[in-house]
Length: 111
Image (cartoon, rainbow, N blue to C red; front, side, top):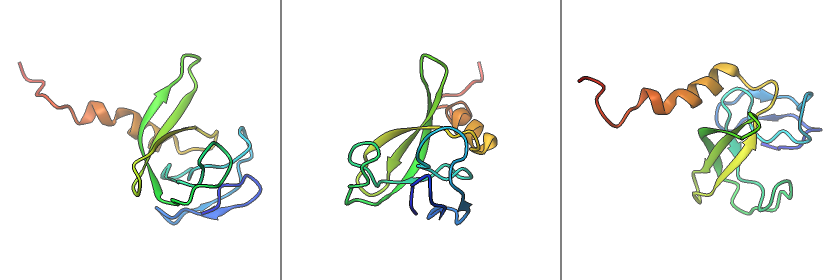
């Protein structure tokens, strides 16, 4: 799984072919279908992380300006990172991720 905007890659999580990002952002850093990524950076864009673990999407973070980012947690080392959403990300996958806390409440709603 390569995350360069000039190359396509096959998602290590779902197997979907992921084309280069055509709209917004310089680098494709996650799958547009399942939203998974790889832990390839120590600092954004450096591609120097030795971990290379699968980064699963765990939440959506909405910045004060309204822009959405995906929070990913590395399955191998546990690091959490934010990645800007891409214009061609699957909207249903993003909505499902955003609604996850509401669908798995830690308390009953019955009065």
